[in-house]
Length: 486
Image (cartoon, rainbow, N blue to C red):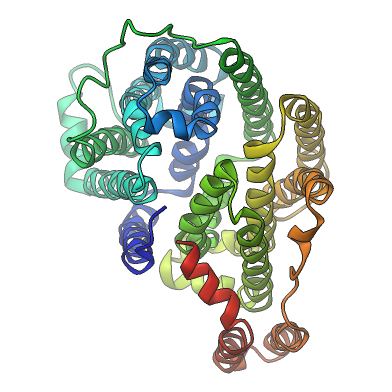
């Protein structure tokens, strides 16, 4: 496991902040409808291809890290399976979406750009899957977390830069001139193509960074070996069937939820949700993603996983309480400042998303525990939990909730999964819940500051400083342990 906490955290923060700055160009250039179409509708195609191709294999690889370090030829061949499957799925899923699933509002807005954009998203997915053998090779190295962060950070930066450049009026006009002889391209259609080319840039950069970082380890990693069967031995095949089946179930449920959201909400509302997701989870992704990656790897190896999980859950509770206390009252002025008046309707969604972040974080930790250590029979039972959570989400989407219903639906759905995973965590090891809540006086400061800010918004700066000081003083041990976890 990596111990360079300072540079790893700096890399993560720098990449996220750089992408955040570039994303402001996208938010101020693209309309809410185009932003929603790219980040909800076309991401559906991408996530379908990626989930069906690689998620089951990744779950198996996570439990076979010792064999990866030994260079097991069976796992070498298994790492190539997502590339082969993804090559077919990129075409099949893209065709199915264009022919049957693309909503009428998307066709009316972008016209002929829809099939081209879907094809580009499929190409981006295939490039990302081509880097999957490199990801598997990195999983067997001590530098795995830093390599993965570098690949994702490079991809995010490339995606943001390419999309931001192509969204400029001169580039949009150039695209319109290039295709004018074949089809009339509206400004909205050109903007959708800009997002699609950004996704291609993401996949290409992930592949490039992975190849560069693993240039001394990745020879012949795109070629199968005859020293072992492709699908592995019987235990590996049994685990692969369970993990792939659960990945497929998650995909069906998740994409079904997205389709329900697409049918029950407008493109503008979907764009507002995508914007709230980008802003609301920014700090959480920067601070907690390296920690969660470290804990996930430790869970598959044993060791100090119980202590680390307890610390990470405590930090999520702290961060979530502070976010709920301080962020919702300033959601509207924050959006006016960073996104512009066109996104004023997203303020209630962003405010509600602050309640979603702590649920998202806690579920990420406890669900990682289930996925990493639970036997196959427990994973099969957990499939029913996923179906129940999906039903809850669709039920909330169909209810007469006026504002932020996409966020409320996600909170309700994820809470079902978090509670079920927490029950299994408590069954396996009750001591994981020891020390979950912060010190009483720290909790009191956070709650009191939240009440003050809602009554006197002008005191926001003072309350924020008081919350930070209380956490640093009262939770210094947990913070220090979090740095050590890296």
